[in-house]
Length: 233
Image 1 (cartoon, one colour):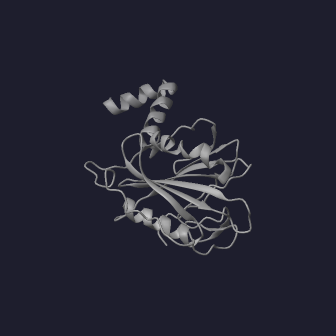
Image 2 (cartoon, helix red, strand yellow):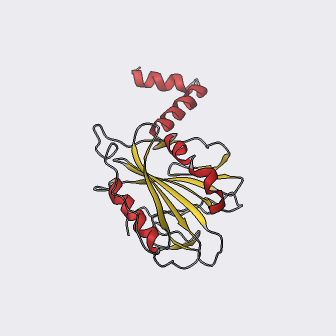
Image 3 (cartoon, one colour):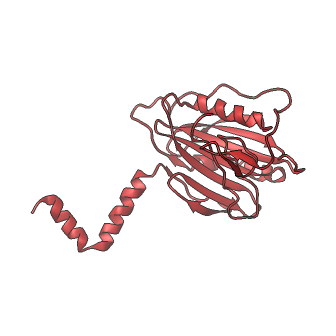
């Protein structure tokens, strides 16, 4: 009997061991590791997305996409800011970020007011780029709640482990993007409630642009349900 056959024979007689081994293999292959921050509950978690919400209707989600050749933190940061600016989001701050396992990222803070609404919102994106993946952490809610969360976002980002770095990766330890703050009024807004998804189709959502995936502040557990473009437009 071969060693491999012997192992599988033992596993078949110990289903608990087999389940534990399977779980270890699955967790070992996960592209990220993230626990709900204090005061947030997990709405759902998949291999490419985790959604959370707080009782005050602040939404949080993390979306994961495959990176492409040439996809750097500078490229995806500029792509994000350009798309958001075209839809009326105004970049108000930009700062370095770092994951729990030392991957370099960038935090972008935006302000916006949804078309047809009177209540201003805050929207924060933290980008982490590795050789294999793009990680888009998003937190959004009513502007009145911004002060309660602004100081926590760096801690939330620094608790996330993101994977996909190759040995000696320049992307994972790469430089920060240039400052992308712009002067002047924000650009035109798109149709209220429309958002371009990863395949170019419009879906009812928050009015966020393709590539952003802004989680909407809502009382519904499915509040943080954005569609983020997996490819540049």
